[in-house]
Image 1 (cartoon, helix red, strand yellow):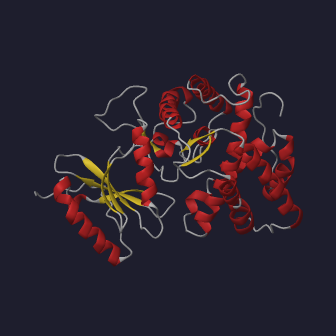
Image 2: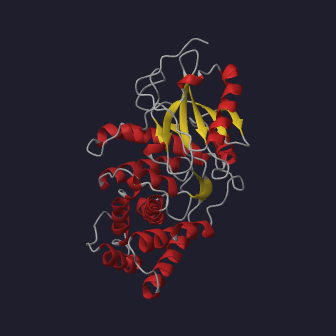
Length: 369
């Protein structure tokens, strides 16, 4: 194997646990010959909010692969493998598993590229972004149409409630220093039960659970191009079977960028029209009334926004990742905008005004709220 000239931007992976570093080197030595890997080229590719991280490694023929480093004590790689197979069978662009050291949590994957969708879209250029969102809908609709009950864990009332509790526990109590008791606790309890009931009424499909531009990959150089070139899909290991409204809410009310309401509506209507043709809107009056579907998306988005505000506070306060909490005001804005449009959510809006000390936002509404 010839010497490798490492790129100037190479960021070598840091191993805080020498024993894990030795396990990685032993695994890499085993798989490198068969996969024609160049071990000296290993560098950090990305890290996320979990205990997982991703490394990139070159091959002898000039290509690259991705290594997932996922300590088994913290991460469930079996779910990743299962969902990857489901998505691949549904026609989605996902990483293929080339090797899996199950006991130690190392995985070799195909490389979908290094540029995420969030890096190529800009809120002040919606026309340029629209083709990418149409391509995202291609992947989402294929995923939803492949749905079967009993395959993935249910997104049930217990899970929805556990996620909602992250908001009072981490955002209110630990981040804002608010005592979650008395009338405030009662308001949250009643609001959360209403949110859970509204969302569980929706039809169930496969749910990615974090379907957003940061987890969608733009085809790498040399791949098929065009305005509807398939986007790669990542970070799907937490997929469940639950409300159809979740992933479109996740896509359009992003954790890391905000669109004007006009663009959010435009893409959501495009999704609704395509989902109708696919038979996914055969519920109550959704197929004939976009407003009815839109309200369901808003209620689902509300659950996600409350959950993510809590998660971002936890990532900062428990895990030492302050960059996430910096985006929390975006979610508070989403929550307030939705709460201001539904009279049942007035108590939640007042609670937020007390905690945040700012006025409610306004936005678009369809039909009777």
